[in-house]
Length: 125
Image 1 (cartoon, rainbow, N blue to C red):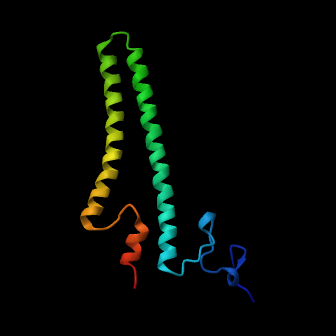
Image 2 (image 1 turned 30 degrees about the horizontal axis):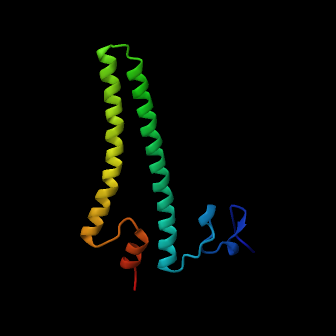
Image 3 (image 1 turned 45 degrees about the vertical axis):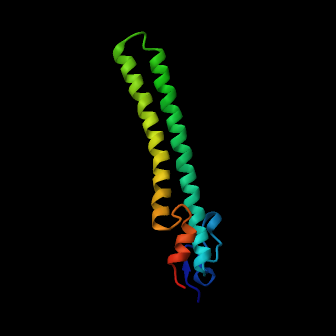
């Protein structure tokens, strides 16, 4: 008699089965698991970077539009200037965070921006 879980016989559920592009990975070795983790992390960071860039561009356009439509009103000009400054500050923080991670990794002797190497270094022999 087979036991069912979510309409799938338990005998068919094997290791590495799951959803999405990483669903059929064989994660039996540290190197393959580290490679899968690095791939997922890389995609997440890539999406976050694109979102941050779009957000900066959006804030810059809104600030520029506010500056152009201020009509000489000092409060509106100040508000638009602050908005543009905040957008630039956010972009600088993103670039400096990446640089700081690179510097800390170099200081520790680890390539933090490539987690696959770090995981394989710290994993079992």
